[in-house]
Amino acid sequence: MELRQLRYFATLADELHFRRAAEVLAIAQPTLSQQIVALEDELGVRLFERTKRSVRLSDAGSIFLTEVRGILEQVETAAEHVREAESGRRGVLEIGTSGPPMNSYLPRAVRAFRAANPEIALNVRIMHSSDVLEELKLRRIHLGFGRAGMQADGLTSLRLWEFPYYAVLPLDHREARRRAVRLDRLSGEALITYPRTLIGESYDELIAFCHAQGFVPKNVIEVDDVNSVVGLVACGLGVSILPHTGTLQAADAVTRPIAASREWTFSIAAYWRAGAHVPLVARMLDAARESARGTDSLSL
Image (tube, rainbow, N blue to C red):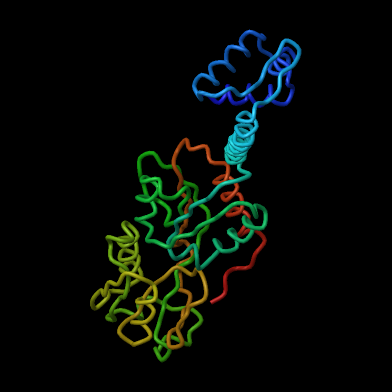
């Protein structure tokens, strides 16, 4: 049983005339007759009662017509949904992001996207930057946000946002009241940061910058998430250096700008599969670009 046969049957049921039905379908009348006979033979029932002067649905044909109309409507609905998805008017957008974008401009971009595309289902998953690339390669997400500079075959990236680094200090630290902190005044203290396995070359850049600024840590304490970093700083177990991407959620820790560090910034980029035609990705990128325009710097 073919879809075209169902369409032929439904059209003939509407017209109840072989010539008119063939004209509507833009096919030859013998072709229509042959296909209706083939359909009846496959079903083992007579769908139409024919005389030389008339054609009408049989009882079986009337029952079959109800089912066929439902099938044709479902097919048309599915086709329309596919066209809407191709044009970006329907679908699901899966996003993966590391923590810094979520603490800065990404929520603003997501809200703008949802307001402009209320019919689109949008899912956001939090993960480490290194996992963003892996999830893209596995096609589990359409778009990822993480630290700039990561490389992966088959992926395209766009640098979006840059943030200065700030020192994170215990509330009662001797440098906590200064407007800007000289890193050499922190020398000999523990540095609390992420492991290199999570932040890649950013780890080497951080250590090199600290040494260039005269900050030689007593030791390095590595933890896997920002809450652990800030929590250990609040406990007085060391200091940290983090990108200034949003409000610090810790009562016993403060952030201060780093003196002479304006050229050292943390960059966030968007990543997606090269060559992928996903209109929703393009719309989300537009929202991400707009999210940081005309805004004041993020407060701490």
